[in-house]
Image: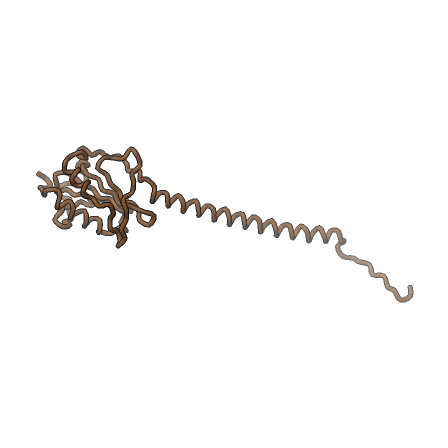
Length: 195
């Protein structure tokens, strides 16, 4: 009993302490792994959404079929053949976009990765919204009826031998409407809206 004093350890046994530390480290690694997997999955999902959006904006455009009894008329042929290969949208020259098959007759679209599609259809039937009290807007001598659908607008030239429709997102502005008005004014004779 001389100079050495034995000290009894009254704490946690060493094997239990090692197991507790190991479990804590494993838990931290597991949480980090789940977080990294979650980030990777979210990143991958964002990439897939971006790819789908790019395909939606650049691949063939599915144009819904609508009745167009005058689509094969000489008037529509004159308008459609005069439409430009590129359309000016917000200062950018936007190319024509292919249509998914079967494509409706007398239908053309423009669009690219940065611009939602702008479509022109010729020879469609008279819109139900066109009444003697409808508010029409004159653009370069062409009378247009505006029909809003959600975030898009459709404009129908209603004072020509055939109805011509321009559909575009609201953010597109009026440039395409002005350009199409000049083209229609030069290709189709004016007539009363209600003959």
